[in-house]
Amino acid sequence: MDLLKVIRERKTIRAFKPDPVPKERIEEILRLSIHAPSAINLQPWEFVVVAGEEKERLGHRLIKAYKEKQIACSPGNVKPLPKTFGKRGAKTLELMKPFFEEMGVNIDQYINEGSC
Image (cartoon, rainbow, N blue to C red; front, side, top):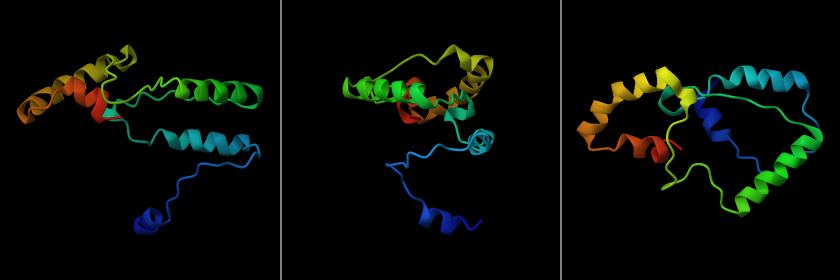
């Protein structure tokens, strides 16, 4: 794979065909998804596949939440790290803390805002 070609030809898609995605394709995408980057490499992935009426209900709920400005990750929207990050996340943060302090960066602010 030519990295420069991939970067040049990358596209953002905002409209989708109504055709159903084959189950095999979804399974392949899920297998490859674990290679995605994650904030401080915590890899907190949870995948949920929805289709049919459930997909429609979820879509309506997401649009409603967006219109009500219930944005999950944005500057000033500070939340404690989920407990699911557990020991690995705590250990990673503990190791990173001295470096952030040396740079004068608030680690909580970085986690909540800088890594969205």
